[in-house]
Image 1 (tube, rainbow, N blue to C red):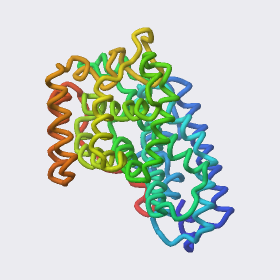
Image 2: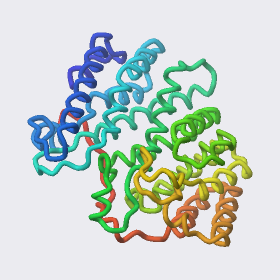
Image 3: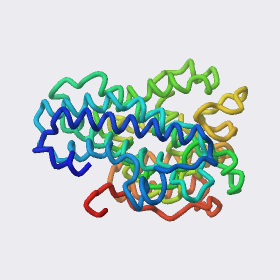
Length: 368
C-alpha cells in the first residue's frame, strides 16, 4: 500500500490502479468466505495480528482512492480513472457489506466488514465532495451517479437493519449483519450529509431508488403516492430510527449537520421539508410482511417504536418546532433540533449496551 501511494505523483499509474482493484475484490471474496462459514468460523487473515485495528484494517486499498481524491491535484484524466476504478469494485463491496452474518464468536477473529464499510463510505464522501465542487459545470458519468445513489440507499438500509429491542440479548438475537457500533456509522452519516449537499436532483434520484427497492415492504397506499416523497419519507424515517435506538446514542451528535443538509437538499423550502418530516413519522411497514428484507424489527412504524406510539398532538408539536428551526436556518437552531428529535425519539437511551463514540480507523502504513 505504501508503495502504491508513493507511486502517485500526483496521478496514479494505470498498473497500480488495476492492482488495487484486484486486491479489493480479493479482500471482498475472502470476507465473503469467512461470513458464509458462519459466526463460529476462524481466520488466519482477519485477526488482531494481521487485518485488524492493531495491524492494517480491512478496506486499506479502498481508502487509497479517497486519499487520491482528497489531495485535490489530480489531473482531469486521472480523476476519471479513479471514478472508473471505483465502478469496477463497487459491486463486490456492496455485496460484502450486506452479508447476513452476525458477530463472530471467536475472540481471535476480527470482523472486517465494519472497517471496509468505513473505508467505502469515506471514499464515497470524497466522490460526493467532488460532485459539489463540479456544481453542474461538467457532465457527470451516469455510472458514477448511480454508484453514489446506490451507496446512499445502502447507507439507509444499513441504518434500518439493527434491532430496536430494549433487551441486549434480544438485540443480539435479531442481529442479521455486522455491528453498527463503530466508526463506520460516523462515515455513513458523514456521507449522507455530503450527498444532501449535492444538487437537489441527487436527492431525488436517491428517493426514487429507495422507493423502488423498498416498495415491497410498504402498504399499498404508499406505493401509489408520489415516488419522490415516498422515497424521501423512507430516508428520513431511517434517520428517525437511528435516533430511536437503531444506532448508538453518539450518532445523535451528527443530527444537526445531517438535517441541516437535508433541508438544503429540499431546496431550503419549508413546505417541502415539512412534507418529508411529516411523511417520515407515519410511513409504515406492511402488516403482512413480518420479516422485511433489510429492516430488522417487526414493528409497523419504519421510524421506530416511539413514532409508532406518538400521539397526534406530540407529532404536531415536533413538526412545528422542526419547521421553526428550519425557517431560521442557523447553526444554533440546528443544534437545538438534536434536542427536539431526541425528545421525540424517547429521550436518552440507557438500554443499548453500546460503546462510547469511537475514533476513526487509521490506515497509515508508516505506524506499523
